[in-house]
Length: 387
Ligand SMILES: C[S@@+](CC[C@H](N)C(=O)[O-])C[C@H]1O[C@@H](n2cnc3c(N)ncnc32)[C@H](O)[C@@H]1O
Image 1 (cartoon, protein in one colour):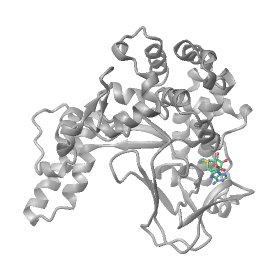
Image 2 (tube, rainbow, N blue to C red; image 1 turned 90 degrees about the vertical axis):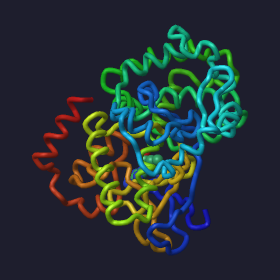
Image 3 (cartoon, rainbow, N blue to C red; image 1 turned 120 degrees about the horizontal axis):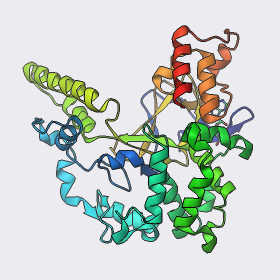
Image 4 (tube, rainbow, N blue to C red; image 1 turned 60 degrees about the vertical axis):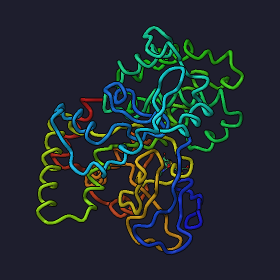
């Protein structure tokens, strides 16, 4: 934290500011999440990640074979796959069999939420109330998911197990209750936004909040606030052993011919993966980070979130030189969206995050006409149709 500090401004609330000049490429801080989880559908489709830290659990070769549905693929340089040497550390919950990358992750999970949540022999019992809840979520929330009922279930587990956890969640910014509905619409889809009561009824059936002293906040309106908190502060995570292997191979010192051969192999594999799974390459999930969630959005960001350890540990890294006192901002929008007009960017931020962007780029374009290009109009129509 010595490089940065949290300060409050009238326009954007809390934000992160540089205490001193900082060079591009500097890691400002690394942070483990308060809670993280893989998305439901990702896990169902066999994307194998540690239940606690999302570290990939299959070797790069197994990963690429499974994703490409081609079991003849052989990856050279197996030493570039970090999972290979970790395989013997993998361990399971003795009661339900859930897989973890290490004893440390299993112990942390048990200590934080899993002791009270473990379904034991009922793990695959479809009629168990927790599985009915997960199933309802999946049926009403198809990929690409942006949040997960698994994250909510873990949060409930944490409230049951960790005495002072409430203050940690209170520290996240949340929206006014009358704005919640809009964010539900974007988080959960148009059809589902009206079914929060149904989801809540299943949740009550699974966890009986009135019977637990520490779950008294979990009323219908408390549940809506929790959804809004996750929608506003959730950070996406993606881990992939194949991507780790590619990165490590790119750092090898190879002769020109070897480099050419392996680059051609990698290009071919990515083309194949693109045909079979499209953009669904990673073990995807989302998480809540106490400090990173204080970082505001800019349409011209000077920092980005990275996951350098192939798990849920986030590194906030500068992408430009930063002056002392300057605000550190990330982009909540993807690269493609950042290229769009001020009007389109503001619309996306309003609809997905419920705020009027006041970043320098938007302020400098304030006199641009409120128009979108024909391409953007088409895309917006498609977005609206798919909501
Ligand atoms: C993840 S939080 C960021 C930290 C937040 N400012 C706080 O006080 O904790 C996201 C919220 O910050 C505010 N925010 C972030 N970027 C902004 C921007 N560019 N312009 C205006 N408000 C912004 C919005 O209220 C948004 O819902």
